[in-house]
Length: 492
Image 1: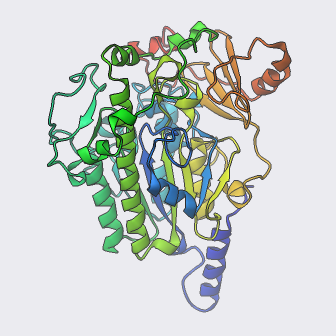
Image 2: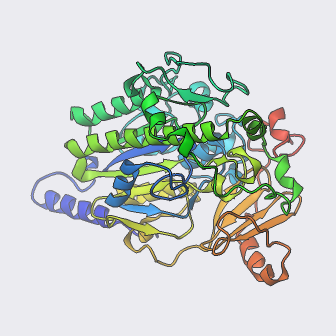
Image 3: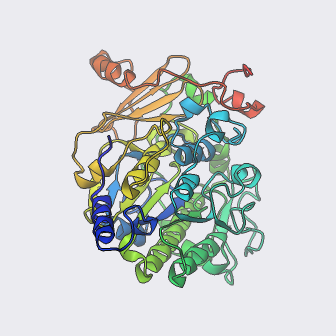
């Protein structure tokens, strides 16, 4: 049985006292904690909390970290928006569901479609459930989810993001929209944060909190799109990072792929980095990513600040997560779509009244898959039977050094797995080739130790944590999936 949080014990005691004195019943949902659920897209460890880049400026993320616990060794279930968010919202591993790629269908996947999605779970447990911005993968939300489990959605139950169409720019964008999303640039000086789609979402969430009209308990989800490409932000954010001061990624090395199995190239591998380098846009593109991360930081500060000023501050759980990381040149890539550290490491912060100790961290290997069962535990709601594959994080919230699993798993494509322990990263591909990195001495994963006999025992230990079931039929495959290591034909 999962450990019950201190918060829920306190709530239960209050309910019992209320019942014996003629007050509210012990199962009164109004006594449960509220949830502020903040999602960020494509945000890697380039911030002041995870310290992946010393040039990052994110004071509000640091302030949020100071309020609770940060999991510094947290990883995604999949390094792509669609399967990562499907795993978060269902609590089901991609290898169990067969949901491996962005184009995979959530609604036509029988395993995911028949699950109780996270917003549905809280709706069924008496919560008012409202959301805005990118919480699910955009295509899935617009065409499939359509507000499933939400009492209210902003802008609507068939549109998760405010439009980018109104943004204006001073000059021609660097790549002119080449490759659809590979672009960035400062907006026209008269475009403010309030005009930006993410600013609009943050204003909506802040107004909901400050209005004092939410029905408790509530689940309020706010999804921020940046720093996902295209990286557009008001000029003031670019000004914070003068181009002449921008540094190339510390983790980049020209010969980095010399000892890496060829299997990595079968995964999604866009040509953006080559184009960026050929056009001398590497530093401007990094500047744009840092600028958009700073924009996100301000918006997180705005939303959390609104909660602190609201009547709900004392009884609201905050959880902030990013759906996967992002490579800005490391391992020759510009994007996610790999099983290396820069693509799988994520932001995961919690502030839970009466449970988390302000300013604590834990380096235990955890996963975004753990969010669903943790929220169920913290709110005292019984999780869907047999559905959730993540773990309840409350033991680590109480004791960051508590006994814990040795590894956490990231899945990308059929039988492609990345395992992360406190010290090592182990990668195995569908063809049986391997990678192993020792983060104690090689944080940039430059030296593949998989063929070194001295590490045979480490590899054996890691292999024991791999899934024994690999679902190939949970989705309707599309041609784009074949080059990502999926079966050449569906068995359906």
